[in-house]
Amino acid sequence: MKRVVALLAVLTIAVVVAPPPTPLNVSYVTSDSMEPTIHAGDGYLLLDAAVETGDVVTYRATDGAYVTHRVVGETDAGYLTQGDANPSTDQTAGAPPVTDDRIVGRVVTLGGSPVTVPGVGPLFEFVDRFRLELLGGIIALLSLDLLVREETARDPTRPVTTVGDVVPPLLVGFTLAGVLALTIAASPNELVYVATETATPGGRTIPVGETVTREVTASATQLPFTTVLAESTGAQIVAQSATDAGLDLTLSLPGHETTGPRRVTLTTSVYPTTLPAGVLADLHAVHPLVARLASVGALTTPFAAAYLLLFDARSPLRLGTTFGRWAR
Image 1 (cartoon, helix red, strand yellow):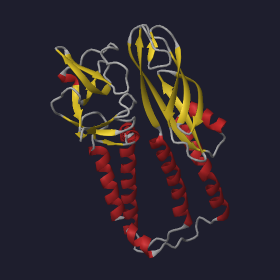
Image 2 (cartoon, one colour; image 1 turned 90 degrees about the horizontal axis):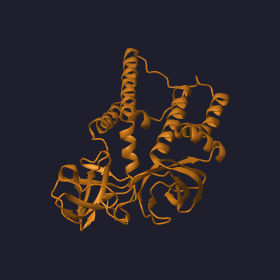
Image 3 (tube, one colour; image 1 turned 180 degrees about the horizontal axis):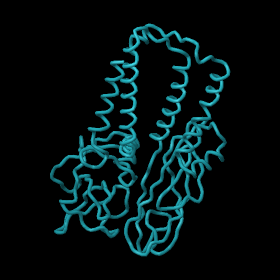
Image 4 (tube, helix red, strand yellow; image 1 turned 90 degrees about the vertical axis):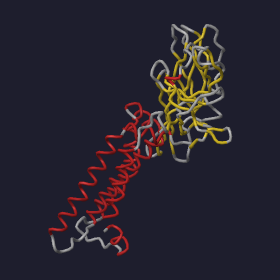
């Protein structure tokens, strides 16, 4: 079990010691406002260095959110910033100039392009959101390993491994691993709309005081035998359909009485098609975790039934010597 304990110890250090995914040294973007330079979900490095016009920086907005945009100018009041995909500066949308004390860092570049790691955002977010749960699970596994070793040391005879010792933990582990994989695969994307007095129809600007609809495409990988569903905050999804490019969504954006940026978060979840799409949609509406458990559980339940009907849990299981040496 020494190797198992070592692996768990490394994972514990990674979870506990590693900083959370806030923009300090390592961060990621949640919106498409910097595309095509930085895509939603891309990770990047931040450097505490002097800022010049043209640099991509992460700064704290007045509402406490972290924003990663490019410096496009300077004034006596601070820097002017703009997303590469946005039609106007943040300051035109109502944000104040960015002062030095609100800048977290400059994005590290190589050859003039930001150094990014595609797609790590969901993983960072998952570790940050479930940090305590992951730590608790690791401690539980370590404690279980210590208890098993203590019981084994008390018994001079080597215990016989039975089918019941192996199959149920494997089924439970597979289910939990499947739920974990689906949770990590859930892809959040942030859209930024700017409320202005003169909005462009169908664009990223919306009129003040009016409820409008916008058509967007959420990035999602539609694999065979999977169902993709979306949820949103800051807007209502009134229609959605899957395409090769992702999910085509119709959003209803509520009216706002003041000008300025409005953030909408879209999260796409992928489920194995082990249940009818309508059932998955209903379970997803209750909570995505419920849909994940049900979809993965529907896959493992037949194996659990076969185990209960066809196997004797007390039957000894002969493990190969190679596996036995590795586990010890």
